[in-house]
Image 1 (spheres, helix red, strand yellow):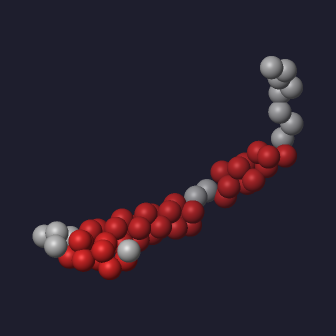
Image 2 (image 1 turned 180 degrees about the vertical axis):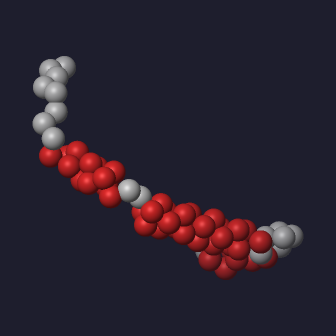
Length: 61
């Protein structure tokens, strides 16, 4: 099955650019995510930490 897919993909012109684009998007996304986490304000992080422990409004459906 893999030989069929590999052989089929090799016949497509310009297909070699897609793995490069995918890797670039993956790398940029995690680089931006790391930058956001590193530069986030400590008050915001502490507020988000405490959200699961705050009592919710008792809503009955």
